[in-house]
Image (cartoon, rainbow, N blue to C red; front, side, top):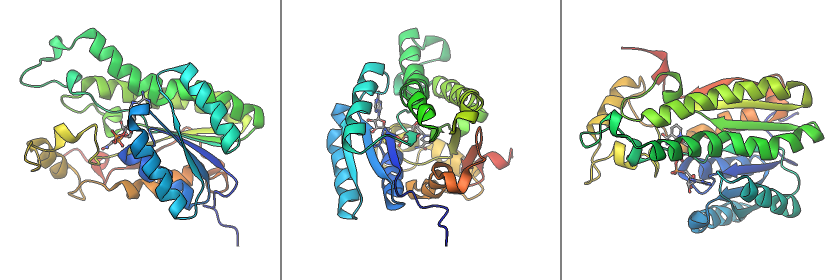
Length: 271
Ligand SMILES: NC(=O)c1ccc[n+]([C@@H]2O[C@H](COP(=O)([O-])OP(=O)(O)OC[C@H]3O[C@@H](n4cnc5c(N)ncnc54)[C@H](O)[C@@H]3O)[C@@H](O)[C@H]2O)c1
């Protein structure tokens, strides 16, 4: 019987693959049969290599490649190394990104005090590093081969801005827009571009907002749970099915420009 979710023969590049969500998704893609290239910053190499080992221990194929998502030359070098080691990429999952306390509105920092260079750095990470530059680097090669699935990560804050994280929300809204632009641009060339919208998942980049210093849930966390019909955070493994669906041409060949929400119902309600 045809397995719609079998990724055997695919080569998946997961940028930010040393992170909490990217790492779980890299592992999920490998479990579905893809060879997986984990790209992340040099400073995250240890976590990236640990994920590679976990994948290999489960019988999968993976490699870690140091790369900076906000540098096109760095992505180009990693692209070459991935191709030599694992083959030409057919799946691109952009999971580098996150909020930065320097651009978070707080009692100490009003909106008008956000420094332009901090705004630009966070916006650049989430839009240029989280979508634009990797799409520019990997997308055209996929188009030349007539096959590819690109998955960018938005956020519930891309749909309606969240309090405090103004830069992040604006950048994620731009990720949605760029993804839809590319979906149209590459639709006839065999390359699909979709987004996922995760709700709230505890990770490195949002720890300070979600938990107090003693590890207890912050007031913001209580508000998030109160607004999430399932009344809890998501777990990284709960994103895997959505990503395999979008990655698999057999499962989602006519799906492009779509956004798949995995948010426990967060965006389904107002109050
Ligand atoms: N955790 C959530 O609740 C949540 C919700 C919605 C969207 N997201 C998005 O999911 C993605 C993954 O985030 P996460 O929550 O797993 O965070 P994380 O901090 O655990 O992982 C982010 C990873 O990106 C890497 N990274 C940062 N800058 C990079 C760069 N310039 N080049 C290459 N790699 C870089 C980090 O080293 C890290 O491994 C992000 O785009 C984030 O905005 C997360």
